[in-house]
Length: 447
Image (cartoon, rainbow, N blue to C red; front, side, top):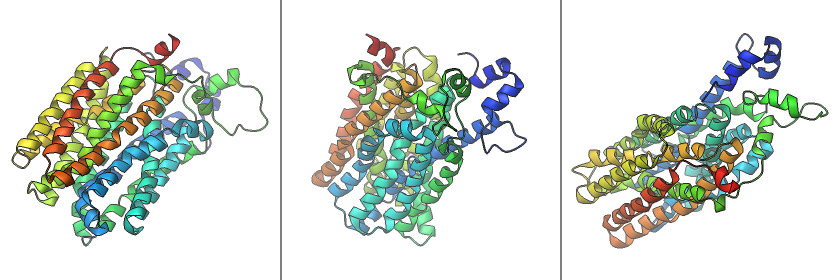
């Protein structure tokens, strides 16, 4: 796809000019400013991705203890597992406006701070309402970061969308699996308090704030942005408070609601999110009800999540090389159907196999993120498509985990919930196949 922007700068810009356009305040002396910026950005992306799911999977591993401690019924627990997609839908739609006003880096930095604060206060807020409020604060930070991560990847790494999305998705899967695997053992080690076990994850989120501080202050801009601004900007008094990143986000709005590709991608995103949040919220409980010990059930959930580590790196790279991503969608869907069949027929006997199959199926998430970057040609188009697909998708996913909790409570078993999960996989495969067609939302808007 051509040279990276920083490579173009090296070959076309004299050394003195490069220093002016590439240098950002606060860059350590003796280091290449651009190389330092890229390393810091990659660190920020990885640390942020690590924090986008522990708030959910740590709760899934301790859901029974939280239910007992707060006196929740199955239906209320189902409501609790529906809070993540609700927050992602409500707060995710705000991300483009916040990015235009403050910059993507500042919004992600604030998002990481919100995650740390929410995770720290929710176990000790007292009662179900306080727990929900703390969860909502953390999930608000996750929501805006969810939407802006594909945007940041597209803007800073335009010719490495597949590999950088793979790195981000791999870190996300690693954080998801880590929280599922170690929350129960850590809780037992620290005295068995579920409050302490959940609050521990605030430390990881606090660490993710640090790499974004230079970006939050507007000290750094995407490669090549300075040259474009110098050629087109009008004189201003004093230093501009907003970086060129803001100008790149501001563009004529595309009519996403009139794009069939945008709708297909939004519904695909929503259905894969439904499956993912049902899995993260309820799968450990399915195994525990089948007689699997709590620690082993947490490990099985971790296996499901950790499958995304290697596959989240492979699938985006493969997807960017294919003219149509539909075959990948179908393969992942078939793995999901096989895993659900196993959960229904022999949940304990074949637990490890079903965990692996469902882990493969959950890799529809990095595929959806990759398609967001591929179905729009421009950075502003990715911003709008990401916000539309994720916000609409998460709205679609809200009823799923709640309905699973209601069916579980009123049927007294997992037969009906698993049947629901299996039924939802069919339309997910259909719309995912349609979203994988080689076209862009800008083309459809032009028509």
